[in-house]
Length: 251
Length: 206
Figure 1 (cartoon, rainbow over the protein chains, first blue to last red):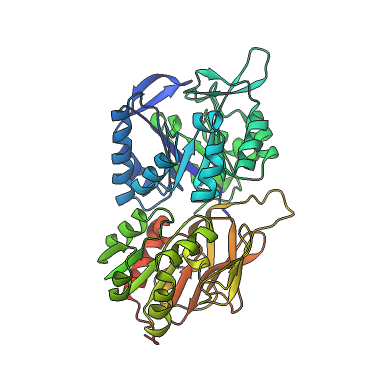
Figure 2 (figure 1 turned 30 degrees about the vertical axis):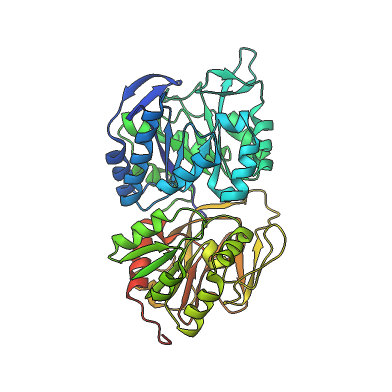
C-alpha cells in the first residue's frame, strides 16, 4: 500500500536556513545540511528545500547545499525557488534534486510547466501554489513570496497546472504558514478533490493531529517546518502518531 | 568499474553517489567505449520513454547495449525509465519501440478509483515473488520509493510486485538483467543494500 508521506520543508534565504510566520519575520533555525541529515536519520519520507534568496549569490548556495545533501542523504529531494527556465531546472536536477518546485514562474509563464513536464517527466515537476484568504473570504493565489495577487482561484489554477503536466501540487496557506495553528483543511480539500495528481499540504502544522486532518482532507503528503523546528515533535513521532491513528505510513 | 549511462534523462548524480557510497568505482558516461569496457552497467533515467529511446539511439548506444547485455552478459541494472526501456513497446505519448530485451509492454496507470492518484509517488511496499541475490539482506515487503505514471507489464512473472490499484511489476530479473521500477538510490537503507547486492552480484550466465 502506498504510504502517506511526511515531508519536512527547509526554507533558505541568502544562504541561511530560516523560518517565517506568514511569509515574514524570518528567524535563523540552523544549518540546512546538518538538519537534512537529521531528517534522513529520522527516516523522513522526502525533503523539500525552498529558497527565497533575493540575490543570485544567495541562490548559488542553494545549489551547494543540494549537492551536499544529495551526496549523503539517499532520499527524495524537492527543490524550488527562483526557477524561471528549463536551464534552471536542468541545473537543479544536476545538483541532485529529484523534483523541482515551481511557483511564480508557473503563473507568469504556464508554458514552462508544459515544456518542463515533457522534457523531464511530469513526476519531476511540482507546482507550488501560495494561497491567501481575501477580505471577502475567497481564496486567491499569490506569487512572488505572497506579495503579488494574481486574481486566480486556487482550485482552477491547480486543475490548469495538472493539465499543463504538473505531477504534484504543493498547496501552502499563507495565512496559516508558521502559525502552528493547523492546516487550512478546507483549502486542501477543495484542491485535492479537483485534481487527480497528488497534493502536498503545507502551512500551519503545529500539533500531530493537524497532520491527520490534512490527510483526511485528501492530502497525499504533509509538509511542515515549524513543528519540527520549534516543538519537540519529529518525523519519528509523527509517523508513530499517524500509524496509531490508522494512517498508512512507513513503519 | 560500473558505468552509469548518461543519455540525457534526469538526475545521474544521486545514483552515482549512492553506488560510490556502497563502494563502487563509478563512471558516468555516454561514450560507447566506456560502455564496452565497463564491468557492470546501470541505466537510470526519468522522463519520457520516447525521448529516452531516441537519445540512446542517437548516442549509438542501442546496439552497444544489446551487445554488452545479451552477448557479453554483463550484469545490468535498469532503474525506473531504465527498466521500462528494456520492454518491447511503450504507449507513453504514442507507441514507441523499446530495446526489446525483456518481453512486455509499458502502459499508463488507469484507475476508476479517484483516490488512486497518478503519478504513483511515494513509498510503497515491494513484495518479492522469487528469491534473488539482489534481495539478499532485505526484508520482504520493505518500502521503496516510487515515482512514475507508467509501468512495465512483463510477459514472464516479475521478480517483485507492488500494489497500487492492483499488482504491477516492481522488479524484473532475467539472467544478467535486473531492473527496478522504484528508485534504490532514493530508498535510504534498503535501497543502498540493493545497490550493494548489485555490486556483489555475479549472474550465473555471465
